[in-house]
Length: 138
Figure 1 (tube, rainbow, N blue to C red):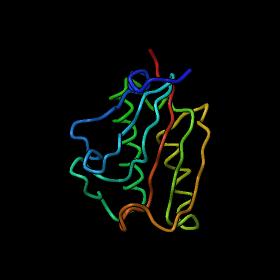
Figure 2: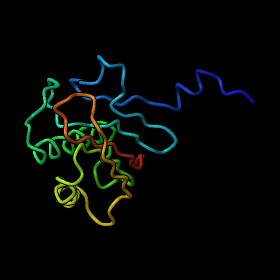
Figure 3: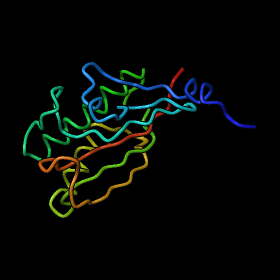
């Protein structure tokens, strides 16, 4: 049985904040589907899309705050996160910082995690990007 486009659209809900700093790129900040919230990678950018600092921890804190803001727009919180993906441009320099950020923003039982070093992110001054999957409550 084929799934109709209308049914698929009904089962997938776009989540956005105001302002939606990802709209110009045709990216949903998050989607709710099948009892889950999938948050797109969030970087250390402010509401105008500007990188907050060159400092790794400052970017990481802003990225987690952005994840938290998007989850709130979906009616969820960091406590609902079951999986994170953390992408960094220099693992050797920042592994301890990533652990510190996880401890600051996440709580037991800690979510599953994929931590990757990448050669670059979407903007040359980004040092960290965080995506998340959370339970959709209600």
